[in-house]
Image 1 (cartoon, helix red, strand yellow):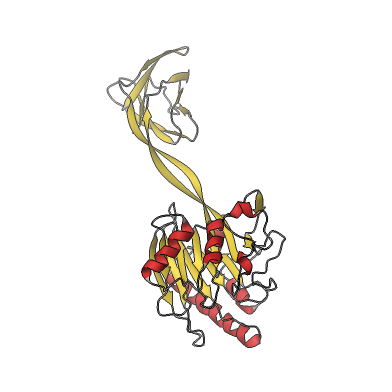
Image 2: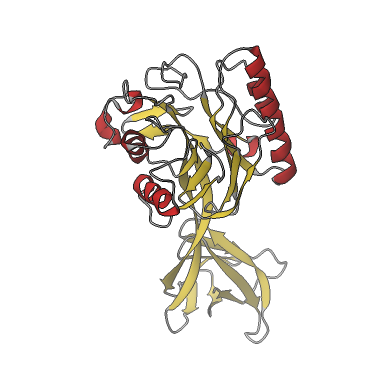
Length: 369
């Protein structure tokens, strides 16, 4: 489709529009908030998700969850699907859960999981969970690789060294299995007693580990007693640049949120959470949230009325039209032979084109999809 304008004199423009409206694809760019949670929110004597942990995830509304102690009811596939359906508000959410372990790790995602698996922990004393990973099809052109981890527990230098060895193993597995410069998140229960532990030093060599998320009174600790930073969400440098403040209700947490229902206010912002949920029997951890903005493009089909051209000078024209549409400009001196002069693209609705060739054109023509 095209339309033509001919120069008569600079103050006069003759426009010959195309005959009919057309439906054209228009590409627009926007972004999507992606909320990622580290979730070791099991409770009770069976290290399983119960009503308090479910309410916490319902109220916090993460899009991607790195799950630890991923048990529910009898752990059948319908049971796990029921848990996923309860906490995500999204029919068809994807999930992966390790098998063969008593307290498996896993990942739940609002978007499709394209690949997933479990790496065996080389620490033979930690034989009730592995390292769960998934490749998630985020909106846009980049996939996100998520690793859900649950490192060796307990204090003392010997256990810290074991956690350091686990961190080094994870570093090697991630660097050998995921693409260079991939978007990566490692999240979960690291069982670290402070942010100067050796495993944190390992993670900071390939992930952004600071600053820490905090709760609404500024406390970064995530264990039940709120005196140790057990749980973390770490992003690769390439993905960490997309981090934005975590906003819940009217409150904003620039580095992410550690959520404790016992101190968070107002709870109306995270309904149906109850004040005692984070302190329920055997719930040993707080949820940790971090938010990221992911840019992506999408195509709308819009009805386009052929635009009218305005002659601004002997070599410049302008017109109006939908934003994010590419118009190809052609010129001719005879109306029989046309040459491509260039392209005009605008994120607004105002288009313009200047003919930079040595000789002014007698005619302009626009082509568009």
